[in-house]
Image 1: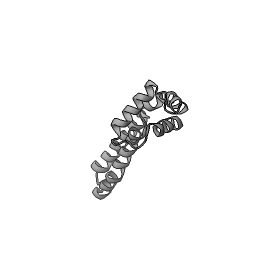
Image 2: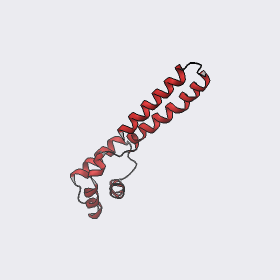
Image 3: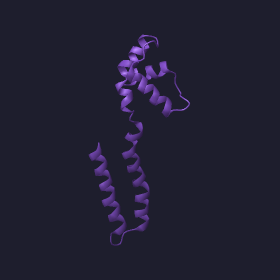
Image 4: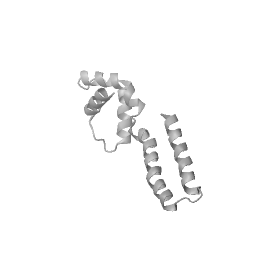
Length: 108
């Protein structure tokens, strides 16, 4: 995925440089190109950074299943770390521990 981002940025830079600095370049067309292309590529390149769940949730799946199976009695270390991460990231928390465990177990 990183090579795709690098390629997209290099392509944008080369095309936008040609559009802006070419002989007889239409400045309006260059401005429109930059206005449309730059944000589109920037959003496309950064979206995985915001939609990828933290690795801590992926590693907590087994403990989350144990938490659900024990009706909240058994709290594994990895689920506890995921729960603490969730509580510090989302204040006030949007889910109870049981809901968080269910979300982890069904999503990862």
